[in-house]
Image (cartoon, rainbow, N blue to C red):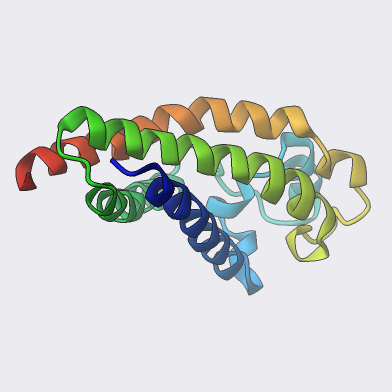
Length: 168
């Protein structure tokens, strides 16, 4: 596999991921269970003081459906990346896909969550605009990246590895 291609793919993947996040968090969608579950518990608690309480757990249908759709989308993107990079075995496809998932987890945590999410008003839930400290909880986002983030990342990585064995 070619390393410079993988580096370019990592950058392109970050751009695609950023576009997906900014597109998804527009308008009323940021008030859906699939968005609110990404906020720290104290922000959720404050938000639900003035809004209807909805299930935002990982077991809710809408969160499960969104995460499953994300896994499928990432599998498709990562499969194309593995093909372009020249992966020819299960392990090459798996490691490339998992490496890109780990990269996007780090990028999401360190840039999107710590910098943009914490500072841009577009990500503030109605009624929580005053909670600057709560929006800057770095440890909350690191924990989410590690678990369930990296665990969920194993699924598209395994699917990509399997798909590589089918086409190569």
